[in-house]
Length: 476
Image (cartoon, rainbow, N blue to C red; front, side):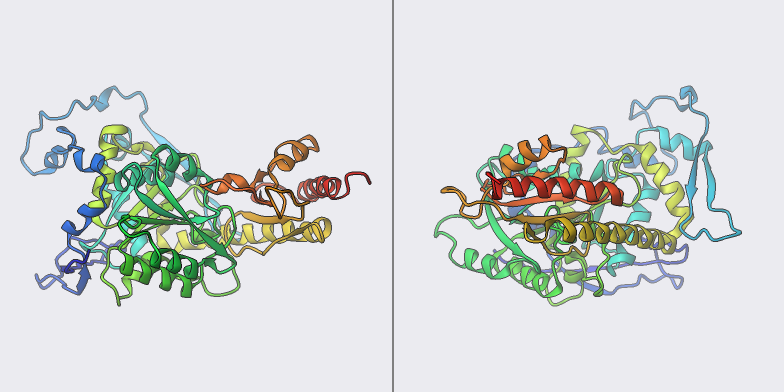
């Protein structure tokens, strides 16, 4: 199905260091760069029956009207903040710019109206200050000005938003493309939705566009084509692969040719430590022009760079799809915690974007060193017993063990070896079968390098090597 793109206005103000999408420039006229984007009606074809049937919350749908000047609201059953027992909150934040002779930590205190907002119900999409800061981050990080061609919502981690996005897009039995191997966290939810999954193989450059092109070109006549393609393009969990620019451009072209949405799950975007320049995100790439905007639904996570316990994630993309996710949230869990949003915003706004990027640079450098130590131990213990590529982002090695073939698995199967024999030998990892949505015997294993020190890494891989040797030479 084709659609005529709409032309929308982008309005940007940088006067306070944070971009805004609703500001008039000083001469009273609105800045109007033109953006070609799909009209909102275009996305009806991508919404599930369940999503279309969702009704706005009768209360939350009216809550924005409480902000209208002069309004006396009798609307929401919000608790009176004078009864909240918490009267002040302080957090101590370590600065990434700390140097000798300068303070390395700063105490930030929340009280008064900011504390009340942090402890009270808030908008479904997120607290206004938080949404504004994160929208500005998306603009700066991905070079994509704010405008009506995209919207943003905050969720309880990206997993929360991905789950709701699949429910918003897929009806039971409908087709979706997934990379193989795929993030294991989406396997149960896709199976629970009875999704018709088509696996697209990957290699060291990312998803195989040759395979994707062939599958779509030979799609069965009369069967609706996939509505979405799910991918983790940076430091993929589990493969560790970062998809290069050429492959991303080809996937974006295929999305337009075959009419599907790219679900860009990118929790390791800021954990890139490759020697080559960082490839642009799908979301940035489509914003550069050449195609009508609105094929990418992007998911960000702050678990790997700020705190996994804060449970903060973002979804950014076409407003009708983001709105569908918000409708689910408004009935399922109302909103992400106002308190965690306020905590994050307190120090992120204090930092600003430059300091945030410096922090992520230090985080990625930390994991680069962890990767190097793990690679060194793999060379020491697994040379001749396994094959692997060196990841340029993320937290994982994806290793192919050299295992004895069986009738059902010509290259061997890591399932029993990892779940039973390796565990009995004192090492815990994930067998590769966990990362194929259709299930398959595979010699691959995922190993995380994020937590262990060098001594534990060395011992873990020594134990794993012993297990592999024992099945290669069972009578030795």
